[in-house]
Length: 310
Length: 158
Image (tube, rainbow over all chains, first blue to last red; front, side, top):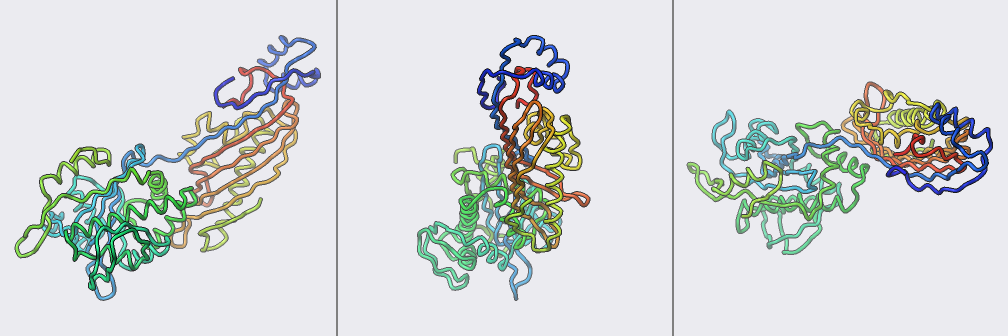
């Protein structure tokens, strides 16, 4: 028996000559030669119970990079600065991912615009220039850039049923409306936005971007737990596309990327914040990458994973 | 054919009708035509180019019944589908089809062949028709009183 054929239950029964003739017609000359070998009285018959399966899905790139951008657009505030910047690296083969949190005040060269905070690249040139600025910083070119704003973020989180997040520190900030005690909490869209905005914390922008990354990781894990069939992925993407703009992939490509993302084990997601320090650029307070940043970027660039020991 | 749950088709039922037509085409070609003709069938109107290119022999044996001995009679007992559309704007970019089907067939070599197939199909629109772009399929085939012609003659091992 060949592998994968299933269970064949052999038994010997009588067979009529007509059946043998039909078999010969069906299988051609080979059957004719076989029929000549059949014993005349008790040819073998079998029952066949065979189950087989097959699947095919277009593969996503071995490593795919998605830039997640949250801009600060809301009524009364123009500019659309990218106040949340996260580069998500997905290694489909390893079933693992990395979320690299990039502080919004990181001082970089913005192609064609000179040196500035990385978050104003979005103001100058939208998703494409934002992706170029991140590439200039990290050496990693995003395959897709997904952008949302305040209203989109709130709507997205609400549409997905909220998100459960482990909050590490106490929050009491009127500016962002973030009032939280430490511990695991299920947040509405408005609460998740408040958590992701609050920078009046020990660590300032570093803590804020880490909290944003924590929301992304928690959200992905929660979706995965709710269901990750192909139909589930289609539903999630329909919601995502209602509250975001996507640059760099068509919806079908995004679907297959989402399918791969849902296959990632949450335990294999590493969240890491760009190593940096607070510095000055003229009169502006900015974040400067430290010497540890470049090796980290290079480490993530090769396979999407953090392999080096820190 | 029974259409069950439909998600994400807010922009109209036209797409649902197109999917039903596409699934009928798939069943007609991959099962009915394959079993009655008993040879390779033309899948150009069923699969996208990349799905066709990925269709090695093993996958083809699961997607179609063309390698079975030909039958005289075939009855499709049930084809049930649930649909989940991925829509953008007013258009539909993709649909996930959860399909179950059952069929019976009879012929000189397989007098009581029974088929059941469950599938998750990804279909995309292409020039007015929906084509299968990716799939996850399980097929079960049962038959008794089949002359044992030997593994080397039996054409549908997978």
